[in-house]
Image (cartoon, rainbow, N blue to C red; front, side, top):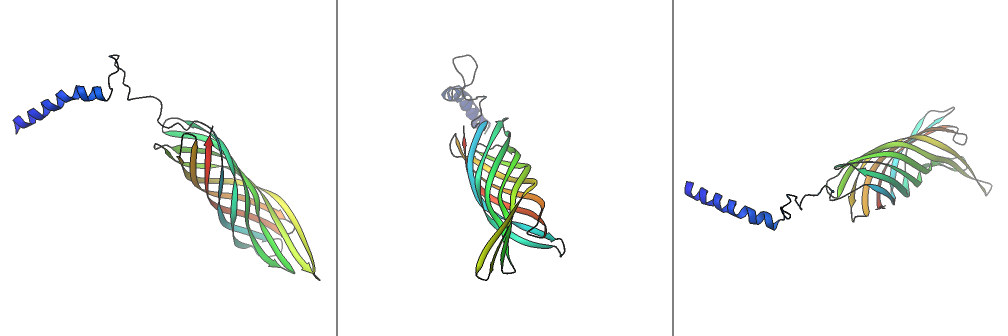
Length: 226
């Protein structure tokens, strides 16, 4: 057994120089390796922009001036675009992103002689992002500022005459979420993310009091890195 182990050791040691030469560990005797490079295999640094789409659901709270508070489930679609900048620190990517979303997230209920729809028509966020890279894939977390345009639209029909009145207000709040992004090519990435958006409370005359908008979003998108 000892003799067999010595023979195996001698064979491995004799084969090592040739194996290293085949893998180009030595480069012309200067001691530098051509296998190792300080440049990462994937570099996330740079500006990017893209589009996204998804679905939102949440809770709309109405606090009328002279009635009990009510909470109603809201839902709807959203589609938009985003732009940002990443800095790749080698395994850790930090950056910032801004997005703008056209949305139809709201609630419709009956009123006298018609219906009333309350919801969010447009919203955007400005966020920081931080992610860890695993080759072509980067899971990340994100959080920041959110703002949106809310509206109340009352549609009524009296004596066969239809009318519509609307009111818009600006909501301010915050957002946080997480996601995962992967490189399809050197310049194109795809992503999926979850966001929680709290747009706070505004007072609407047509709603007769305060309206609070909070919702979650699941969306998918594609980015182009410049």
